[in-house]
Length: 133
Image (tube, rainbow, N blue to C red; front, side, top):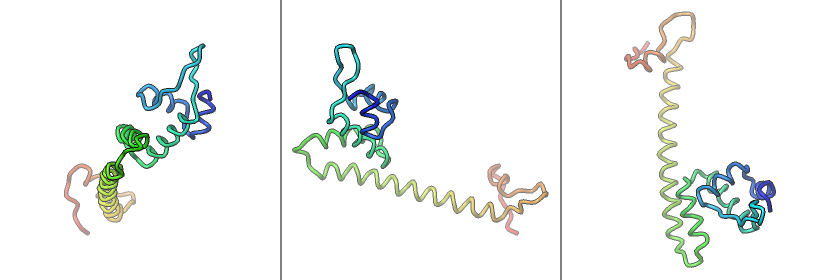
């Protein structure tokens, strides 16, 4: 397969595939004229990487997961450890986002949003304590 065919098969843009090749996540064969020649196995790896990235795994985690996937003697505990660590980071990020949401909801509620110049949102961003009305 050429790069456009493997892009269609894997669901990844050609630019991403070239990047994955540059960082040695995939190593397609090269034809005599230097063109990339992707195999079905390459397409499967790329789809695997696309799915892992869509779940938010880092490039290094993807590298490790791909290596574990290809290792038939792997322990599933190793895979679970990576996924659990990632899940913990997602939970922390969700908590941070919920705190941000609560703060912004409070500030938006406190702001009159009218023609007056006073604005609790700007005061908060400037570090000025917002007075409760």
